[in-house]
Image 1 (tube, one colour):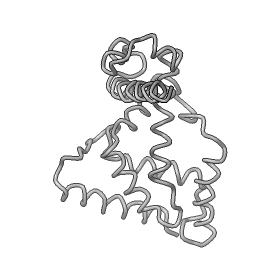
Image 2 (cartoon, rainbow, N blue to C red):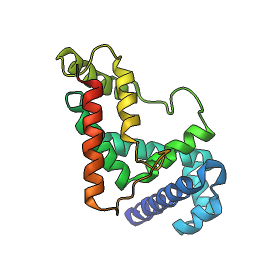
Image 3 (spheres, rainbow, N blue to C red):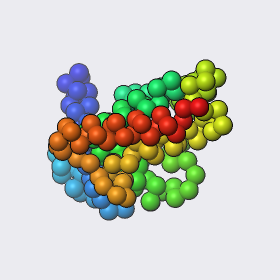
Amino acid sequence: MQQVTSAGQASRRRLLDAATAEFAAYGIAGARVDRISANARVNKAQLYAYFGNKDKLFDAVFAEHLELIVDTVPVTGDDLPGYAVRLYDAYLVHPELVRLGAWARLERRPTGDLYDRPPELDATRIRSITDAQAKGIVDRSIPPREVLALVTAMSQAWSPASQIYAADKDEPKFDHDRRRAALALAVRRAFTP
């Protein structure tokens, strides 16, 4: 029985990985279940058994990538410049997160919150900024949730969602270092009292 469970987990993982690439490239409407199942080497019946439909598969992919970014780059209100730089680095390694977010915004939620966050996630992130404001590290005149939104937007300046220039992880280190320094300086100047 363990072998079946392990094989099932492997199939599910391949589906999530193939779906990530498909949704990041084509969006929700443009993604094709046939391509996802073929690339995952899993039949469509298994895909539907695991996820129900294409929309629920997108939800699973998007949730997984949001968890990844929150777990690997937690908000640190006492070091917003460092937080922004770590997000920049995360987007270089996982550009699909930004692409998935852009597709979700375009195809699902054109206004309001991009995703339904668990209350404890927001509470932890906002509390980190609120605590930094109470210590005088972060400007108190900007509400914590707005600080988070602005820092996140600034960190995406060179992401796949950029309107000016999208960076690639294979560019010279000097280019990334220059952008990191500019981002850290901009965030520091924007939010330090």
